[in-house]
Image (cartoon, rainbow, N blue to C red; front, side, top):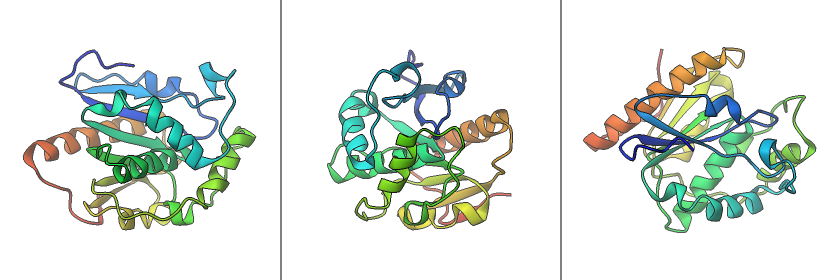
Amino acid sequence: MDTDDPERLLFVCFPDAGEAAGRYRAWRDPRIAVHVVELPGRGERHDEHPYRDMWLLVESLSAELAGVLAGPHVLFGAGLGALVAYRLAQRRVAAGLGVPRALVVAHQAPPDRAARAVPEQAARADVSLLVSDAHVPAAPPLPCPIRGFGEPHVMTGWGEHTSAGFVLVPARAQDSAALLRDAVLRSAYLISALAVQGLAPPSNATEA
């Protein structure tokens, strides 16, 4: 976990199905601290039993990450990781455990229409998580802003899951990892600045 400086905004990352956590551990920035969540059954935790039920996974993560999420933070997820990040925020808000500065989601349709092409390298447990997410109960909009990256026809609908504004930055799924990193980190700077000023992004906006 890259959190040696408490003055930096903590960015908690949830990779997509079949995606290596190392991609996000390589992110370095003087203003952002990065913590990458390796799910059970993946990568360095491959010996652990993977979760196949989204809500059980979120319950476990809520306890596991309690210390990490005790201070100001942003939740970021790509693909399936975006749904995990959203459900974790939903669970923590409902339990009165805190509200993230923002939720940042990339290349994933919102929970109410999350059916999509699963990456070929996705494990069976990841596919089960995506399917089980459809059965998680609906929840009130999150009281934090949501910032999205992806193609508009895929990302449409995320604005309904926040009462604090949604901004979409159009991006293609085939864009390089470096482009995604730069765009996401720029959004983190904006989120941090808005939080300090007590402002929120405009509701349901799209950036050029």
